[in-house]
View 1 (cartoon, one colour):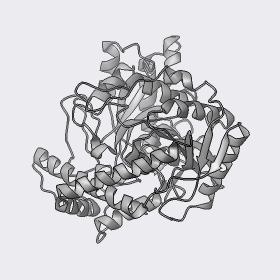
View 2: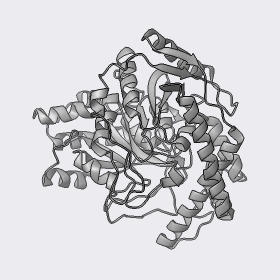
View 3: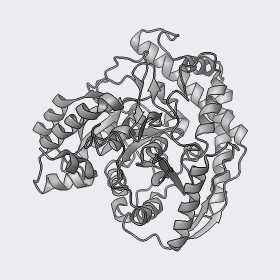
Length: 483
C-alpha cells in the first residue's frame, strides 16, 4: 500500500500518474482512502458512508482510461446520485432514499476513471453555508475542529482537506462549492451555468442558480476534471460553446496583462472581517506585481431587491423538494422530519405564487444585465469568498426555533454576501486558498470571470498558484498525522 504521507501529498492527477506508471494500483489507492477515512473521520464527521464493495467492483470490472483513472472519489449526498447508493440529503425526510440510476454527471465522473469510495455530508437540502445537520451532527473544520467546514458542500471539502480523497463532488446554488473551498484551503470552481450536466433529473436546477462540479486540491485538477465532464447531456435546455482548447492547457498558459477589479465591501453593507479584507488587498497587490492592471471597483445593484428575489427562489425550491420527498418516502413534512428553519422555508415557499417566482427571475435578469455592463470593462473581479473566518459551530443553526424564513435567508447571505451574485448571473467564479489568518485558518479569495470564460480564470488561477503555492499546507486533522 502507498504510504499515507505520499498518498495525501498528491493531487488527483498525481495519483493517476502513479497508476499510469504502475507504481501503485487502483486497489491500493482505494484501500488507502478507506484507511484514511477510518483514521480521521471519527473526529471529522465528513464521510457518511464508505463504499468498499462498490469501489472494488468498479476496479474489477476495468476502469475507463480517463485522466483520473484509479483515483478515489467521494460524492455529496445531494442532487447528484449514484445507482444503489443511499442519498439522504441531510434530512430525516429523505433518509434512506436509494436511487436506481446514476445521474449523467455521476456517469461522467466514472468515465473520467474516478473510483467512488464514499459519500459526504450535506446540510438539510443544501440551504446552509455550514454543514451541521440535525440528522448526523456537524462536519468539523480540519484546520480548527470547533469551527465550520462551510457549506453546503462542507463534507466534501473537509474530506479533501483532511486527505481522505484528493477530489470530491460538490454543488453550488449560492456559493456551496466556493464557501467550503474557502473555509478548508481548497480550490473551488463554480463553472458557468450549463457547463456541466444536470440531467436527467433537472434542467435548470434552482431556477438556474445552481450547478454541480467539485472541490479539489489544485487548479490543474479542477481544469482536467472540467475537461472530462463538461458539456450538455441529451435533451438539456441549454448548451454552451466548448473551450478553444482543453482547460488543462490553460493552467500553464500566461494570462497576459488583464484588467482586474477588486473590492472587499459587499453590496449588502455587511461587516467584513479585517483579515478577509487584508487577503483581498494582498491579492490585488500580487496581481499588480504580476503585471496586471488592478482597479478598486464593483458591480452596482440593489441588494435588498436581489435578496428578496433569491429568497423567493430558494424557499420555492425548498417547498418543491420537500413535497417531492414526502411523496417519494410517504413521510409527512413537519417538526419530526424537518429542521425548524427548513420547515419555515417550506411553509413560506408554498405560499409563493407563480407571479412571485416570475418576478424573482425577472429581477435576476436585471442584475445579470448590470453585472454584464460591469464585466465589459474587466476580465476578472476579486473579492473575499466569505465575509468572516470560518464560523464557530452552532452559529448558523438550521434547527433554531422561532426564526422566520426571511430572517434565515438574511443571516445566511450576511455571512456570504459575495458568492450569490454569480449564481444569479451564471458567471464562472473560483475560490483560491491565497491567504490565512493570524491563527492559521484558511481564507479564500474569490475570482469571478466573464460568462463562459473559464479559460481566463484557469490561466489567472494557475499564475496565482505558482506565485503563492499552497500544496504543502496541512490542517490539524489530517489522515497523515492523526492526533
